[in-house]
Length: 269
Image (tube, rainbow, N blue to C red):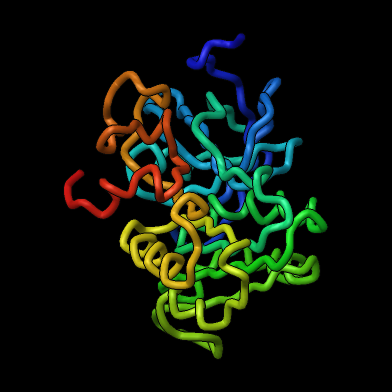
């Protein structure tokens, strides 16, 4: 077996700007192993350091990461261009267990950059659309510019994904829904006994989204969250990402709500 610290050579093949502070990097990686929706990689910028970034597509030819400009490592990453070399190690962590819920309705909820984690879920489902019943994708952003992957929306809807969008602040020509992402639940029609919820976004958003799932009758064990904590080693040894009795890098980042219920929403934990 490969060492969990194995650093593979990655060559940036395409850089796609999403908005003023978000870019997609499509990277060719030597012998990159299979991965599942919800897992992440550590991207190493030589001479600077590394940062944990979710894998934001199920495509296998190039490994896609969606990166927001938030610190020194991402600042250096943003200056890189096609043909530049980067280190990649992974994939790490748990995944959204879609394989366990064939025949179920799915409600996928994403806030802001959280759609980067949910996009591979959508792609997985689109490839196996006949395996699932109704599929809703609820997406919220601060403003229209924060809505990622817009070029994919038509394709997803054409494959039977019920896509609902909302923004906190309408700008420009926006004529869609205005409000928080949980407002979109009023348009969701599912059988709660045969429904799975999956989400990623700011923790406060997920807190209220969990409440919505419980209100409509979805079981805690069928409600899944992708959590974020400051990860360093990615294998559960350094302790930076400890979250109560778990390590997000090793036990997560995807958890069922039943697993983390006692600690979810506790301040400063």
